[in-house]
Image (cartoon, rainbow, N blue to C red):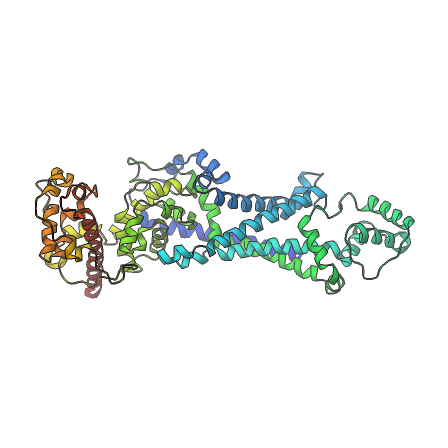
Length: 545
């Protein structure tokens, strides 16, 4: 009765957790609403192929990383078998009369599934430990420990299951309970002979050794075949549990005396219930979110405006922080120059998730996100490789509109819309990690002093050719501003913000000046200046109120 009460109580917690998460998702989705389609219309944007192939077979994960796909496959397939066949064995027995958990093939499959889950979880932990390089480069210390609680819970569940089966193999009290329940044998009816047979063939540890002759052994074999064999074959196919049973045999009587198997059963059962109750509130909720994001059709330029709202939060929830998106990010070199972590896709997801949940929680963090999202070229490489099937391009677009609604326009608009009086004010720019105290190209006179103002760079620039009437300065004029010590003014010019980084200017410069690299560096400083201006303006607005 107590087991049913605990199970029903955990199921209630699980359902309450699901309701809470869905209500939270619906509440947070209001931050993304913009020309939002009715939910009924959104249903038709789902595709069964995306759900089937990416959720069940994890095709995108296979393309992204074969080893990672193998690890996920081990955990998901093994855990699914243990859940359906082992944890729900009463249901399985009713559906299939030939199923018995103590029969050899099922013991082997149960141990094989447990090994797969355990090995997959260990590889997960090893991968997280090996993220030291990523932490040094991005400072993403929080990502190192995300999800480890779930992994340890699963490892506790699997490990206690192996040990529990090993204890039951050698436990004499457990053997006596089964005999009383299924046969009713006593000493006069051959109980000692059956007990001796199990000691020889089933690794049972007896409190008192029973000497028996070959005739007694044959009697035990006959009784075993009559009462036990239909449900309990030899435990050897349970290769892990049998190995553990052999290791704990010397202390088998002590373990039986204190009924450690009963304590371990409670631990094993409790770990399973805790995992179930923990699922809606942990990163394991991506098991629900990933199928939704995988089934959603990829956005196009036509429907991008309308695909905002609820599914953006599902996308944020489906992220497993695997980091594949940042590994293929086309603007990763920008992060190496600016040191802005919010350029990296997996970091942007965490910031957007926090911002959607708490609103304008940190003006400086939102300003950095604005700069990072401005650097994004919307090439789609991050979304193409995302194992969770998240349409990241749609998410970045949604984040742009969210930040605009919070008073954070893109940095180009901020720079070109700010007067030079404000733009050239001395702002305390933060030190870029990894650059030390060495000045950049725009700070080293030797990098641009040999410019002879030949205008070859300007004549080759496609931005100047396309925007001849509106463009303010040419690349050669930017170099001249630097020679005049007007670096801040140069960082606020249209030329710097509209540069396509085609490198035509740099390749054709007869003096070998790194013109394009200097323009990129100036834009990086412009990003930080725009961040400071937006934070300052927002702070002043708050103080006025």
